[in-house]
Image 1 (cartoon, rainbow, N blue to C red):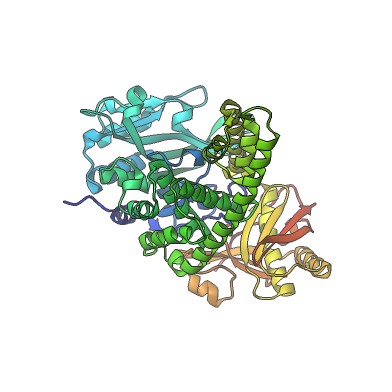
Image 2 (image 1 turned 120 degrees about the horizontal axis):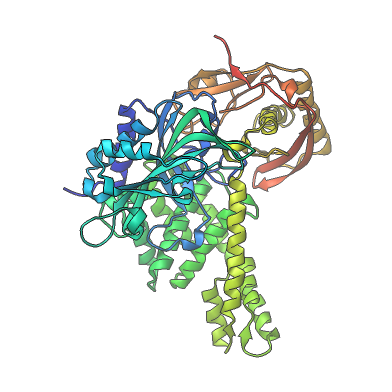
Length: 599
């Protein structure tokens, strides 16, 4: 029997959980909407944050999906056997419905009965307990009831088997992780005793506590289950290959790279494969290369791919990236139709960035020549070499190659120190981006979230019906709102928008939502980017007769709770997209949250 394909694993997962009364919901965009905590969707739970803290989901209390994710914290590890920048995560959720026993039973059933994994190849870990929460013998007991031998159950501390809170406070709890044997000989032990011989494939998080400001862990009223399984990693296991790049959907992309490469280097071939795949999906979700936020990450990914292509001897004259992207679309377009629909735009964007980077490399070469001319002796300072990497995108290998031709070497110890400091700063920034998490749905962010609806409506009144939301980032201090518009707003237009929003606040419109289908939402004039993003049922939030928009929540119960709105700045975000930054002041310290409209 042939190995199970990636497509079959994806579908089998959805079919299985649908048979267990889960609603299959569509995956969200890679760029989160109204979520200040991350630049990209990094896990399936991020689009579900409002529902994990009590909002009612249109699909009910049992959900499952396949979520495309982008993670860049470990981007420098890409090129090994398992790290990917963009990957698909299979997830199932219980929003206050089932808990540990059913989650564990279903996980084990899917692995052993549906995928047909030999039970002896599996092991699990549970939380070992500490002063905050007891040892999770409950989860271990359910594993044994399901059929897991006791010696295959390990117990590990918080750093391994605990999730959250995402910020200083909020929902959190123990998790249980599932592993597949990758060691030599007969499977034995568990990750507590021989972790290097086990590969993690699935994680069930049990959100059962709330961490308070005083550091106490109190039982949650609504206990949730949040799970995540890496599709590519499971495909690696099921297809019996050594790494994720050999799986059936990834291998053709890497084969395309290898056919174009005069030289062979597995690490660089994998980097090109991974990065162009990620760039293809990110561009299709509306991001263009630039110098801030998601645009900057996209530019970095593309340029890293080009640098690796050069290490493979590939000519990058503007056509290379598009050829690899073409293969990405071939492999994934039947599942993610939106990348197929935008294939030409993706290719044009990649070609433009490839050509631009060629000019940047030329400028970097001139800077390197200046560094060599100014260097006393034959050793290039590590900080200078790192500056070339950080500013001009020169990898150490390229700098080393150029300077060696001129009789120089690099102080690589100093380079490593500078590079590590850069990595630490990047990881810290990533953690700060995530720090809001579930805990960040505060009074202020709820007010600002509601204000974005008023802002969107006001922009459409002043600028025209071509205006649609292209992204939103909200912290407790301000909102940032991206919208489709090609021209700089005049001072008069900005003042008019600000006045319209404040009048809507002063009018104290009631805010409520109702559940309907995407088609009916469109028919009733609700604003939203309709398409495969939405499931069979959506929430439409209405603010009097002023605003009607598809959204997840939460929002204040009346617009008068928002306070005074001040537009602070209007600027370009990317081609055809403008950005507004605004703040609010005043308003009540305590608010009511919008609820479902009575029928």
